[in-house]
Image (cartoon, rainbow, N blue to C red; front, side, top):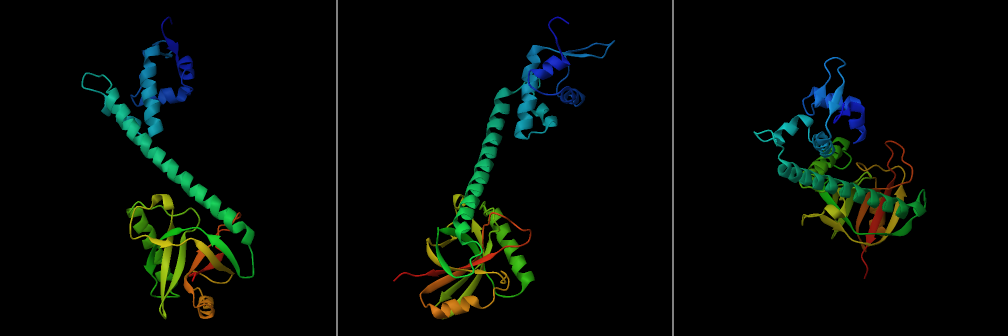
Length: 265
């Protein structure tokens, strides 16, 4: 038909399939300009590309197609300004999420590269660890796995409520801090530095750490090896237990690294 496009030709203009166009027709989002009563063939006008582009934009931004009617004025015209303004806002939200994901990936890849030379090292060693940011909660029932899991879950929920982003690798750890002759034990959640906005986030300083891998320790029951380290070196301020970021991951197995921060005199 002169002046009309077949459903196949119209679909090719935006690289969609004919099934999608039939679906858009079925829900009332895009009605063909003409349907042949004899053959039931659908035909579209070139101007209807505006309607199709609106549908594709909504799909890309996650706006349900049934909500496209919300952008129609009472006279049937499309409120382009409102649609594009809402689209820009949603697109910015997507960009922020993508940027956060990219930062988490970048952080995890860096951690893997940093720990790679020390993988399966059975002897104590020193390695440089960059500044880290954690949320922490007092671990008052050492050895109680259920209590540990509940408090770790609370840390995740706390971070989520405040817009703080945990690292990709298993970010739960322990921190044992020596204050005078008293030990304070905390469950920690390591955060993506990019997301830090709160002033009460605890900072683990950058520096050289005395490290030892703990093959048989667990986070909820770390054993007594940390007490031996504290006893041997009075300059140790705190010890952390963190999961190592490795090239290969075995489900449910998180190798632990004991990291002792020694205060320089």
